[in-house]
Image (cartoon, rainbow, N blue to C red; front, side):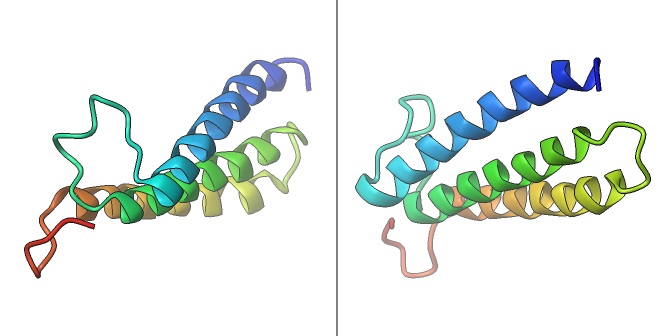
Length: 102
């Protein structure tokens, strides 16, 4: 459990920041200034950020029982969630089929 805390705390902080940014993108369409020129579908990007935050939360929960055989029950679904979130982010960067953002 000792060294797992050094991974758990930063992952939890990053997951919390992503959840806040994803909620802001979903509710108000707000993006970080660096992302504004690349993202054309803000709602999809918000859902992707929330999915990645949840996946990081699942993976960090898998770090708590360090050395346990149950770690793969948390880490593998978290990895799948991260990959699917990345797919959603790439879809949010492409223009929508109708040609209008959103």
